Length: 142
Image: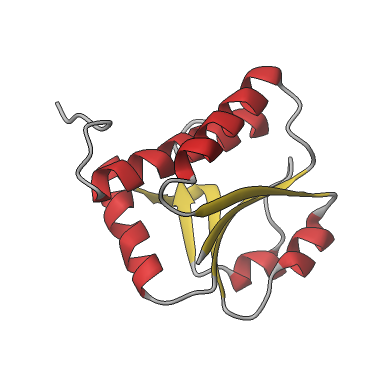
């Protein structure tokens, strides 16, 4: 199984590029992970394949604590998709057709963030989720 962060447009900010590269390397110890950048909404929809499980990263989505996200990630992986696709919308979010294809909507925060930062935040939370699932010391509750 592969996990893909599907985004519209390139990552522009240097710290986000470096952070994504760092977490992509860390995630390679757990799973196949990559960020896929497409040019627009139409290309984002065209990217999907049968057997994908689509999760929208959207401020209107469900709010989960890191441990809850890890548990949900395990459920998604156990459900047998070929690819888990986490999508970040463009400046206007997602159109209704793409939204209707989603299996789940996940919020990273109630706040709004720049798209480059969302990419980095998600990659860190994905890494944290795998560390939680493996009972590794990266995540600390308190």
